[in-house]
Amino acid sequence: MKNIIYISLLLLLTTGCSKSFLDRQPVDKRTIENFFQTPQDAFQSLVAAYSVLNWNGYGHIILSSEIASDDCFGGGGLSDNGPRQWDKFQYLNDHNADAWQKYYTGIYRTNVFLKYIDGIDFGADDALKNRYKGEALFLRAYFYYDLVRMFGKVPLLSEPIEGNDYYVPQADPAAVYAQIGTDLKQAIQLLKPGAKTYAQIAPSEYGRATVWSAQALLARVYLFYTGYFQATDLAGVANKQDVIDGLKDIIDNSGYDLVTNYGDLWRANNESTFAGQNNKEGVFVIQFTDRGLGDWDQQNGNRLQVMVGIRNQSLGNYYRGWGIGTVNPKLYQAYEADDTRRNASVISIDEEALPINLNDFDQYQYTGYYWKKYTPVGGPTRPDANGGDFQIDNYDNIADTRFSDVLLMAAELLLETDLGTAQTYYDRVRLRAFAGNTSKLKVLTPNTAGKNLLLEERRLELALEGHRYWDLLRQGLTIAKSAIDDATPGDFNTVFRSETQGWFSIPQTQITLSNGSLVQNPGWN
Image (cartoon, rainbow, N blue to C red; front, side):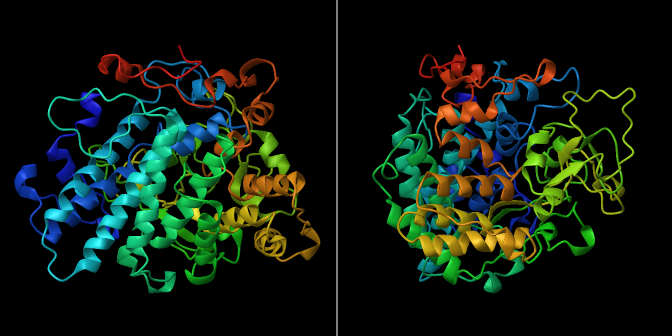
C-alpha cells in the first residue's frame, strides 16, 4: 500500500494535463509545508487532482467493465493476457493494478488539497475558495465511486496518509458510499451559488466539475447502491427525493440538452458533422489532448482509444488499434434497423463493406464488430500525422455523463410516482434515436416491465460508454449472470462467477504490501 497511497509531493505538484484550464506549466519543487501559500497554489494542486482523470487506457473502468458485461468480449491479440481474464472472470496476478493506483493517487491528491486549502488566505473571495473545495470533493467522490464499485471493500482515506501508518484496513462498502454521498452533497452546496448554464461556461473551463455534474453523479451512485445492496437510500446520507430534485434541476435549469442527431456525438461516425468535444449534451466531460507529442511520461492523451481500435488495420476512416473489447453481435442485433444509434455506436465490418484482411490476423475473439464510439480516426488529424504517437496521443474527450443519461435516470426514479414526467423524459431519448418517428415510442408502466424498458433503453443509448455492467449488477447477480453467460463453444464461452459478487480482483502486489490489512475479494483466491 505504501508505494500506491503515499504519493510523492513532486508527483503531486508537477503532473498536469494540457487542455483548456488544465494547460498549466509545472511548478518548481517545493515541500508540502511551504507549498500552499496562495490561491494559485491551491489551483495548481487542484489541477494535479484533475489530471488523474486522464490516466490509463488499459485498466480503464470503461474498458474493463464493458468487457465484463454482455456487450463485449475480451479481444486483443491471440497471445494477450488481460482482456480475456476480464471477459471470462479469470484470475490474473496484479490484473487491476492500473486502476488501483489511479484511484488512490486521485484520492491522495484531493485529500492533500482539502487538508491545506483552509490555511490559504483567499481574501474576500470566499466564492473562489468554495468553488475549489466543491470541485475537489466531487473528484474525491468520483474516484471513490469507481474504486468501490470495482473492488467492493477498499481502504477509506479521508485524509492523506502521513508518518508510518500505511496499513489501512478495508472499510465496509456502506462507509465508503456514505463518504461519497457526503462529499457530493457538500460539493453541490458549495458549487450551487456560482452555477452557470452550459451557454455561460467559458471554453477554457470545459471539463471542470459543476453543480450539475455533482447532482448527476449523486443520482448514478444512488441508483447503483440502492439496487446492488437493496437499500432504501444512499447509506443514510441521500434519499430518493434528494436525487430526483437534483436531476430535475439539471433538466430544467442547466442549459444542457440533447444534440439533435445522435450520430453527431461521435467523431468517428461522421467527422464533418461532429457536434464537438464539449457539446451541449456533455454534463461532465473528461478532457484529452494530443499535445503530449509522443512523450510517454505525459498522460494527457486518450489511451482508451487505441485499445478499442480495429486490430492493426486502418480501414476507411477508422485508424488502427489493438482490437480489445470486440463487440458482441448480440448488442448490434439488439437495435432495431432504423435506430440511428446502432451504426453510430458499432462498426460492422460487413455492413460497412470494410476491406479487412483476415489472413495472418491475430485478433482474438473476432466478431466482425468493433467500437465506433471512441475508435481512433485516421486522416490528417490523427496524432502520428502531427508529431504524436497513435498509441498515446488520441484526443477525443470522454463524455462521462451525457444529458440523455440524466433523462433516463430521472425517468427511472419517477416511474412509480410521476409516470407522466417519466414518459416525457423517455420519449425525448427515443424520438432522437429514431429521428422523430413517433411510431417508435413505447408506453412505460409503473412496474417491473416499465423499469425493464428503461434499462434496455440505457443499454442502447449508452452502449460502450461504461454503464452496462453496473446496470446489470444493480438488478441482482442472478440477472447479471443470465445476461453475461455465453454458452458458445470455444473462445467465446463465458461464465459469470456469482461468488465474486461482481467485484474485480484486488491486485496481489497490494495485498502483499498491506501486511495483512487487505484481504482478497471472494471468488478470487
